[in-house]
Length: 311
Ligand code: 3HC
Image (cartoon, rainbow, N blue to C red; front, side):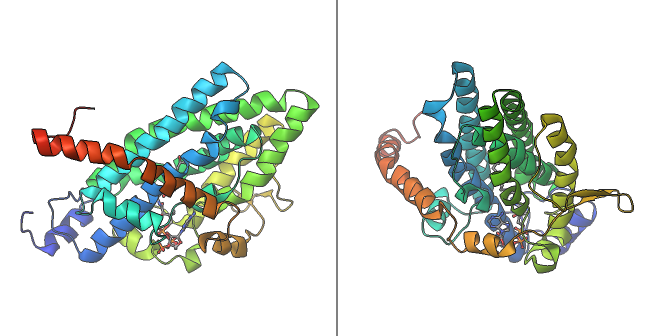
């Protein structure tokens, strides 16, 4: 670690340059990056479960192949992000342990069930769509490894969003039953997708520091509004309605006004009382236990050959 003074940290930040792992940084900056990047990585890994639930039941080989590629991408995003977090001096083992023991979070959105095939489309359109809005600014984050990891992740997220939108477009033009299934999925995923952007700015714990450190480039509410403004015309093209009677164009602000988000529901999900919280962590910890033999084999190989096995 080169010894550079923290004023160099401030100078890099002021010049909008990247902070690299070798640069000296305030402990609080490191801690909030570990928190956010780890929780982002956990979200990617846990996010594989809701859609993975439909891999064996996709309605065609084409849809199965697309979904397989998407779920595989999420695993890759998790690995990029764990690797970015490790540059801050924390191990993957520590991070996974923090996830498994509830000391670190993952995105609230993945605590909702995927009840029908249309949910896969709604997740692609809304959840991955929200992720893109929230994550494109992160490609300009002050911490180099995180910003660079986000470039490829955002490119792949746009494929995720497009495939979901196309799937809903097909269902909305299908039979009455398929159309109803698509509308039901949008009704169930719309509000939880708005919650992905975090609490209102007024109650956000980290936003001011994260903005000061150029980790966050826009506030929770700003990005949420940007997402709503994008989705309304998209829903019109789909011929589906968004489940918000208060949604209307505001000529003054140039944005869509929308209804009140149920922050009590958001808090309950964050407190572990969402529909699928327990199931998600049970499945995650079981998968981790099931993978112990792979970790043991890699460790034995490294002990014997002094290097990790080639992939
Ligand atoms: N789910 C779970 N926890 C949330 C949350 C959410 N949707 N929104 C906020 N929180 C938590 C925060 O982690 C924080 O709790 P903590 O102090 O225990 O960590 C608390 O609520 C207060 O929220 P803040 O606004 O102060 O927190 P942040 O400044 O971290 O903002 C965030 C929250 C906007 C989610 C920010 O962390 C962020 O941009 N993270 C990176 C993007 C990310 O993680 N996205 C996950 C989406 S899923 C995904 O991308 C997978 C894709 O395939 C769909």
